[in-house]
Image (tube, rainbow, N blue to C red; front, side):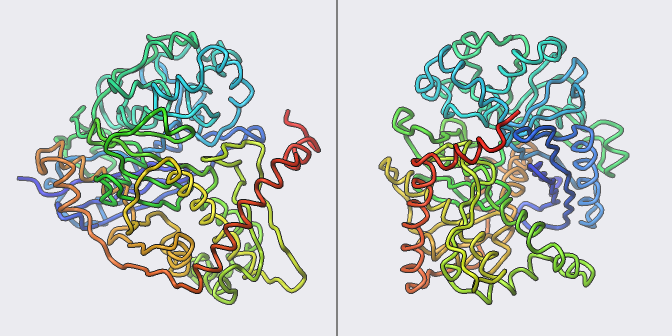
Length: 517
């Protein structure tokens, strides 16, 4: 019996692959990034060819780095960024080499029009997705209206997993249902396309691919992929899951009240919910887990740790280059500066809204801001304020989730690139005011889909066995009471600052300085 699997997380700005055994050990990995493209201020795109190239490369490098006998690898599966899509032709090739990324806000201009066609609250109850511009359905409609030539040429609306699975060797074309649910057209009662939503917007049903389930075998890898990755011909391609659903599984969030907080390119607060009240979760994403029929509620912040990457490049670029020259991770260097500040960043607040706000305010007009600056503040204060602002935004989401009556267990699991920082881990525990545990393999989404790959190959039975055998916890960070008190005050100021800027019309006035094209 084969004993290894490959999990791949195709994220917003980069792809990571690992070769894992059935205990969840990372035997070999690789990561490659790719640039986001901004043709216009609110547009965010990816090159499909670049995406494909990097995914194939990291799989091959992970296999090589693992040192395992490739003939012992049974299967691979993909976790993918959701609501990122391409229009593809009948061969599965992306038209104009373009993926429209979930961060893209071009659909904002047609939201009201869509709302006239189908009531937003009714659509949210059907799909589990709030009516905001980041979701693919809005941009499908925008393309139909503004690029009818491109729309007509398309054979399929393709989520990232559908495109990648086709590129790896799947004969037909399909989308995995939990990842494509975030597009906003899946009926949560049936986990199939919803004709009412599709027809209300005048979208072409023929462009909707067949749906497959997490853990379902959909094909084997092509000869080209064999040659480029070193994998044998009989490696199974197994349908994975959306990144947050995969990440929740890889964090062991499989029970009612389990909580994971992700600090990645986007930021998420995820709570397992046994029997969701879809009508009562206004503004929240209510997504199916890989265990279909069991759900999780998700609070989503658009900017997340992207804000910290931005401040690295804009404020810390010279030091970052020095760190690279010394072969030191720039983020490790940044931690040294952050450590010279103190909880509350000596009174500096950063509004984490570089890409607008997600749940609970869903405000595309909002923007990032430093508040409380004085001449005595240092770069360490600025760096720490960004770290804290992203975390305070997650608390904003968590408190809104709790306000719906959703129960949360008292120990949170934290995931994402930001949790590599010991200081940031402590900030999360202090801001949330509850113990937080880290994962032995921090890339939870990769472990989640490695588990699904194992299910598809018949090596593990179900998601419960994946969580029991492949998910392992490392450190538990206890909140420091004195810091909790500081962050309670900071959080009150953070919420008040958002409402002051929004309710007084400051965001709108700023956006009017240079109106959108």
